[in-house]
Length: 249
Image 1 (tube, helix red, strand yellow):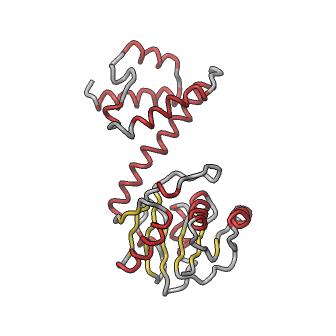
Image 2: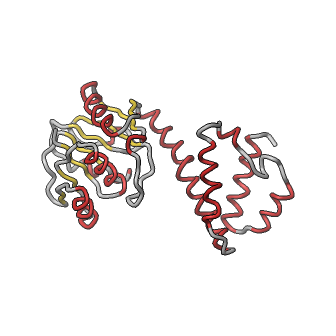
Image 3: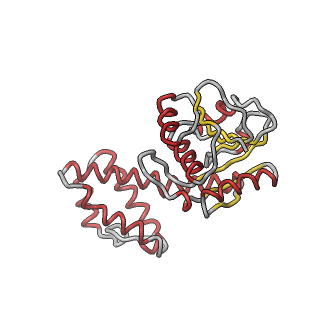
């Protein structure tokens, strides 16, 4: 099977790397950013192009959600399978006369961070059983955790991921702003962060909650508010209100 990966960002890099590490050859990686494509090509030994899209049986579109529809229009071949990797978009967003699918990897991707691909959950959706089988067989060579999921369910999977990953990472950034403002090394907090994440492998997050809000420690909450200003203060108040509401304090 001839497979082409489309994209040059974080998802495209890691998907291409996962394929190559698991012995799934790619005929080409295609995109607009020649500098990034060249880096991927050199590292993974995959031919690349910014101009000519190779003929393939399977095209995997790894671009931002805003670009998926437009990028899908460059694929003119009809007798092929095309899959995007979005968590939120339906397969019908793909604008061509080919077979349409979704292959969603539930993970946060950064080019500089190594990943254990076999642990990444993959969610598959396709128009027919044969295409589901094709994608399942490919994804199963990469990961031990491959499942079928329709668009309705996948939307909520992605929404949950935004809360569990993107929002949490933003709070890390805000926390670092506070520590940096007082010249406190952020490294001090890494064991706490690690324990917080590790704890929810064994406990329900609601049960694992600690801190002044869940204890309704008004004196500490007011003290902290005096130390903050601007957006960080608003986030602090909003988060504490949400915690107190959850525990009906």
